[in-house]
Image (cartoon, rainbow, N blue to C red; front, side):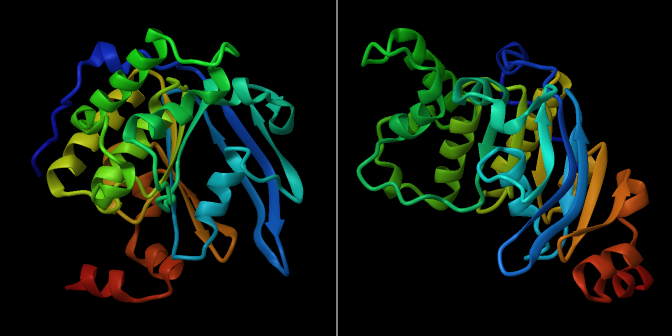
Length: 264
């Protein structure tokens, strides 16, 4: 298999804040019934944790809980030893970048405005952005190969271009931990290679990641550990070699296709 080469300068990528640690213990969340039950997770700087499981297994919900977008009904999330609800918006923005799976409706916003939203918690109260913030926006767009799109209307971009912009928004504050929900969705093969190389460079610089994905190739390339979810519970956790077995994948995805393909 051809190896992707980093397309961005390593010094630029290493500008993120490394060393952020996250700990989740006994996470329970649900509405009419539990969507997640008793989930534990650890990630430290420079680690990549991959979340696998069928649609509806709870991957996106878990990422939102880890990012503080919603609060668990039981259990606790800590970031750098601080209980998540106690983090200020500024502290959270400095530590965690989040890439959602769904592309938001953003009529009337230019690309640079979408990226700048990732810095709002860090902006001074003077009422305008300085050259420093503009340089940060330009750098983030450059890192994802989208600087040329800076002044384009966000809602006129292709799905793949929009995901590049949203990734730039997750990176613009240079957080030490990235929560990425299906980061390779709707991307062309060339940018899949570029983005995978970019994430590998970020990881090597000390940035931690939790990635929800269906792409087993990405898991094999980046993940140190895998958490397999099934109906809101942890079915298995361990190294990629231990968790990507056909039998386990069949159980996670309620199929026998992996075993049949392996037998063939």
